[in-house]
Amino acid sequence: MLNTYIIDRIKLLFRKDKELYYTLYEILGFFPHNIDIYKLALMHRSASRRNEKGRPLNNERLEFLGDAILDAVVGDIVYRHFEGKREGFLTNTRSKLVQRETLNKLAQEMGILQLVKSARGNNSHNSYKGGNAFEAIVGAIYIDRGYDACMRFMQKRILAQLINIDKVAYKEVNFKSKLIEWTQKNRVKMEFRLVEQSEDKVGSPKFMYQVVLENVEGCSGTGYSKKESQQMASKLTLQKLKREPQFIDAVFAAKSDRTKMEEEPVAAVPV
Image (cartoon, rainbow, N blue to C red; front, side, top):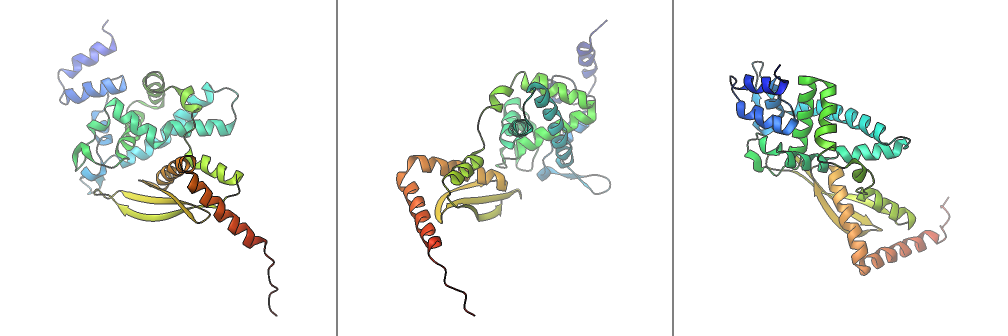
């Protein structure tokens, strides 16, 4: 009896989109049943087309579904892998595995990003494009083959070959949390100021936030979300604190001035 792989290859000889079938096999580890759902997963909103009802067709709905499925699958894997670990550790580890930077990198390494169709081609500067497409592909797998197939894809294709789950779990990547921890320990006031909010050439929102410590301006960071821009601003500010003694001196001098003012007696409120 011929195995499933050979049967699928024979069937492909009589199908259109043979090249895409083979490419997806290399990426996913199996042949799609419904190639159209994967085509939709690879269609960026800038290349949307309309269906017979006039509704736009792109990968945003599949991205929404894939995001939810990815959270469930990765949460399941992390729960079973790290037996006895507390909820906070599990949540943090799952967040690292599904964060935008990780998904963008996976999309690039696996060849998913190169398959995405957009109005500007594959050279769009939208840093979300690869990660969004990865989530949409997971959504497509779920519709095409179900939850178990999504689990096998993550376990055998991603975690067994591309990501070391233990290395990710114990790597500190949350620069914003590190900066907040430093300010709390040193009783330094901190805020994130929105410097600019704009859109790129395909209409995706962009943000620029700046870290301010005791009214002393730190570094700014740009990203396609508030979280991403604040993370970058925090990372650069932490580096500035380590490398520039005059900057940290200015922060503590400003803190000293503030605390002196707070300690001065307050005049009675006039009657």
